[in-house]
Length: 376
Image (cartoon, rainbow, N blue to C red):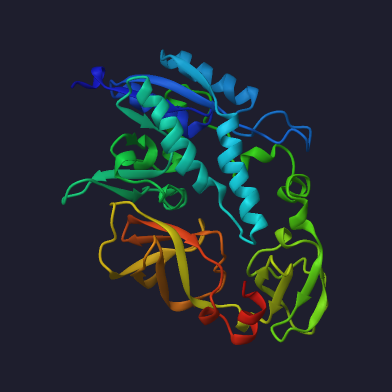
């Protein structure tokens, strides 16, 4: 099949990355269709009527880019499924004492499931997005998910939820470029979006803060409760567990001779556990709901580099595959901010092997006193 006969649906947002992705697909000779999702937003706070990813201005920019490129452009109403999956996930995770990354849920359920299926329903061969990542053939068969060439913009962390069926139908045109080059390409192609700011996480908040959002949609996670040290002594009162994250030092509202950090959260007892810096680091974690990009792990036990946050540096570790989509990760050196709810994403070189959600602390992963306080 020639490129002219190969249809590519490009997920457009009106931003520079997706606009250049669409232009590159057109320049390469594909039959290109632009598609934009209208997502849910919280219009009860901050006076925002539109999701930050699909404001009228962004929709106008995307339509204008599509017109300039001479491609059809469609808008999909994605509000209900986005609200019931991504937003509800965000709320439920906070309610259970986690610090979630909703971009992972969005990529798993919206972009590379719901949107990809809509693209295929239009007889598309591929869905293309503006993500900074690469897909390459695996010598043993199938496809590898690789980091984007720009280390500052690599998005393979939030794409670790993808599997072989998604990779086979997905293109990342800007993954071979640095962000500076993408902006230069936008200028060269006359797209008039080269100077636009990058999109923000938590797009559904509109103009509000996530704490205000949770006060409205999950007020129970903002219920004050005790702040305890690792010996169980009462130090003060917190303003609601959702206001805090593991490793946080500022904003605790308690005085101490030495700096205190958040060690753990217990939503069932509504307790915040704090302690000294040397109590914070851990060398292991358990990941749940683990997705292996290749369909299976490389071995029952293997070495890899693991990122515990989107912006964290990957750290060497030993991974042991468990039952029911779990994996145990033991780092060579203790990691300061292992946070339940964030993803633990595994790499070998620039290849993303997959990842899972960091589970709550197990008794063996904390000092006995802190484990007793944080235990479910």
